[in-house]
Image 1 (cartoon, rainbow, N blue to C red):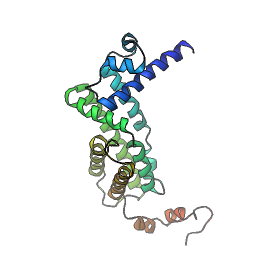
Image 2: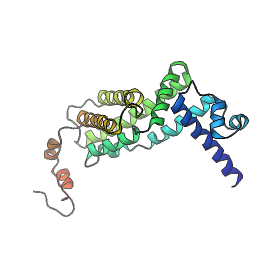
Image 3: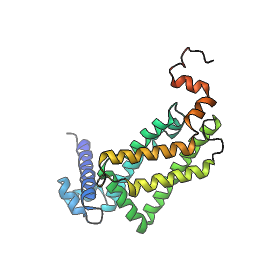
Length: 223
């Protein structure tokens, strides 16, 4: 294996070991030596890649958050079936993955006493709020959203709700998969109804959209 590939493999092994241990033991109970032993590397090797346990954790969390930047929120809200695409979006943000939620719990604990982590969290919230607000305003401009919608307040409330669920409420360690999915689906319905009117009202207001949903949008005549 080329030297660069070996280096990448060792770094990935350290991150994978840390994720497992943080999930099993929690952040505070896991030491850098524990992570090195789990990864099968010396403590010196670990420190050649990361300054300390905190940097390992932040690298793990950064990887998890990279996926958020790629979320197509506008595409979800402007799709012919926004409820279904909101469900799919939440399945990415709130996966049935115990390690994912272990990282969330560790993150919540660190924000209380680590100003850098707290500032990072604020930046993430601002980024997601701006992205959601832009998508909701696009839906308003196309006449798809509720006519009386307060976009700013609704986006704030949606993010507060998702953030609460993300960090504390849905935990695969305590919920069976069926119940987890049921609650996540309820959240999708709440978000949908907060932004959009009743589906029958949307079809009445936009017959072309109704034709698209019925499979008549290509070459069909709407009467």
